[in-house]
Structure formats: structure tokens, C-alpha cells
Length: 142
Figure 1 (cartoon, rainbow, N blue to C red):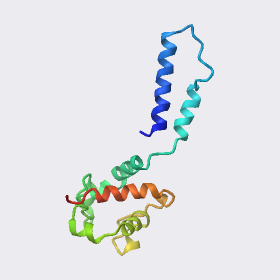
Figure 2 (figure 1 turned 180 degrees about the vertical axis):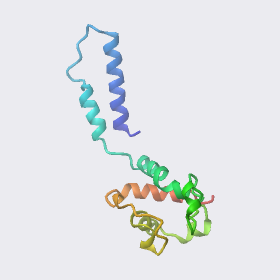
Figure 3 (figure 1 turned 135 degrees about the horizontal axis):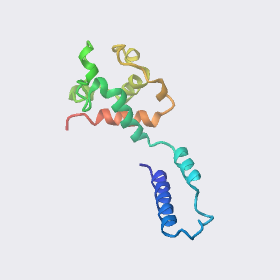
Figure 4 (figure 1 turned 90 degrees about the vertical axis):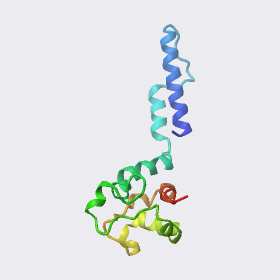
């Protein structure tokens, strides 16, 4: 959770406890209202790492698997099988730029299978793409 969201939730929690313990006390004018605190949480920029983890679970793991072995539930019907990210030779031979291209533009953009779909919504989210690349690189054998 990013710091702004954490602080907003903390203020809301403390404010509500204060209201419960002192029913006769009027809220201080400098405290944010529940509505303004909720708006601040909604307006806070998303955490790219958290968004990337969510995207990996919902889009990538379906074929590539939860641990990047190319064994997700959608992989059974695919030929060729999805890339296993734990392949040391592939990790060394693949650049981050190639990963960026295939993540955003899909398999055909790099001469790979069209079953690897593009993610055009990530064009405007380069920080999320960087985090997705980190996830893929995290499957490399140690």
C-alpha cells in the first residue's frame, strides 16, 4: 500500500475512534472529512509494482503460470506452449527491450505466436511495464 493511502486510512481510523470515544466533542475543522479522505485515496496514483503483480496474476499467469513455468491453466490448449521464464538460456538471450515490446505489442510484434496478446493499455503505463519485466526476470534461476 502506498504511503498516501496508508496515511489516509490511518486518519480515517483514528478520526472514527475519536468520534466514538468522545461523542460530545465536535470534529476539529482541520481534520479531513470522510468524503475528502476517500477522494484522496481515489486520486492517489496507483503503485506500479502492485498493479504489475495484479496484471501478472490476471493476464500473464493464465498461460505462463503462477511461477512462470509456462504451465498456467490456459497453456494446455496452446501449441507452441507459453514461454517458461525460468529458462536460464532464454533469460540471458532476451533483452528488456524485447520483453517490453512483447508485453505491450504482443507476440507477432517480435515474430512469436499470436496467442500472446498485446496489452495496448500499458503504452501509457511504462512504470507498470518495468515492474512486469522485473517479475519476469525474477523467475530466472539463481
